[in-house]
Amino acid sequence: MTTDWTPDELMEVNAARALASARTCFVGIGLPSTAANLARRTANPGLVLIYESGTIGSKPGRLPLSIGDGELAETADAVVSVPEMFNYWLQAGRIDVGFLGAAQLDRHANINTTVVDRGPDKPEGRLPGAGGAPEIAANCGEVLVVLRHRLRNFVAELDFVTSVGHGSGPGDREKLGLRGKGPTAVITDLGVLRPDPATAELVLTGLHPGVTVDRVRAATGWELRTAPTIDVTAEPTHEELTALRALKTHPGKAGDSA
Image (cartoon, rainbow, N blue to C red):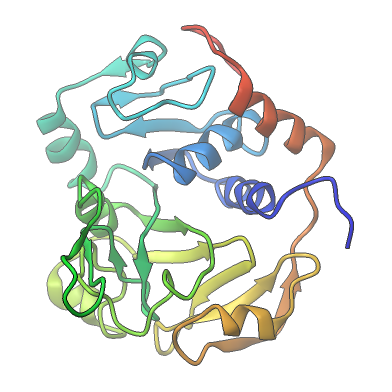
């Protein structure tokens, strides 16, 4: 299959589309930030981007290097303290969507970004850590997750639980007192997974063009179930690809907008 887009671009475009109806998004760095900034340039120009460092309504002209990138503050509508960001905005349930990445994800969309077991006689593999992800996963109205679909990422059991998705199944979030719905979609470079309403287990609901169910199952560390009907995602449009590639290459200036 010959295309003019890469699997990563297809993943990023579909992740941006998932934000089409959101008002506010708490953005993680990396793939979530790429998707959220692309959404503001395509599917949702009015999307308010919120970063952990305290910036609200950031409009960076390039992808930020970290939550501390100065352009996030320079282009924001407001900058608040980190305690205010968490205590008033996040923990009070004032943010619609949290967008996270993951190193490991299990069948109930629990996330590990802390440490991985590298095998016998090897030291633990240290990852970037939790940051604000546990609070984002607990308190945003819903959570979207974006990551590449590999066996090492989609595992039967996490080496460490950094952020709770749906725990061990229905009712766990309520027992823990978590405010939001938890993960509602996982977008990968192969397709889209969503939690089954009855079991809260991730099931395959969408395939990207040219991808088969068998290929997704081979890259998943548990026996992946499929939805009764599996959609095929639309290919990226010229507008989406142009905006994405410009976002990744544009040097950016403070105040740049879509």
